[in-house]
Length: 149
Image (cartoon, rainbow, N blue to C red; front, side):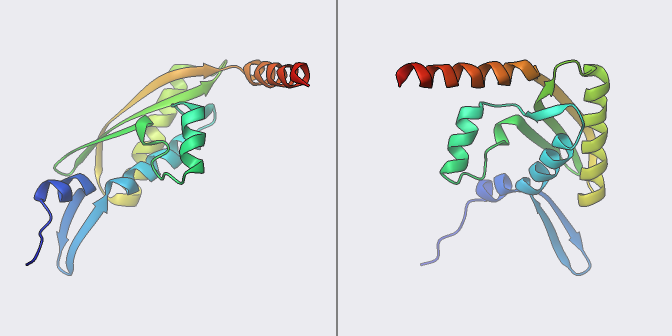
């Protein structure tokens, strides 16, 4: 007895399917996500994709490949792609310019690499990271360790 995969499962995994004279080309959702992640984090002023650092670190330890998937949303309508990305940025960065740079980087890379048309890129600035925040956090952690000793 053969078991068949449901059509819905295939639709979730594959976001784009294109027939050529040689066969079918399928682009998996993780490909678009990976391109978006690299294009976004390469933009100067982006500190990281949004999300919980604790949860992301925990996911990395247990080997989860979907560390940043919560920060990237992809919607396909035929041959068009709509993308939403949530980011944390450096304090002092000019947010409108930074968001435009992120949009441009994502559109350029996704279209160049996949051949798909990006119709929309929404950028959500989730947090602004101040350089002193990390220093203060590390200093507090060190003080707590010293007090426990």
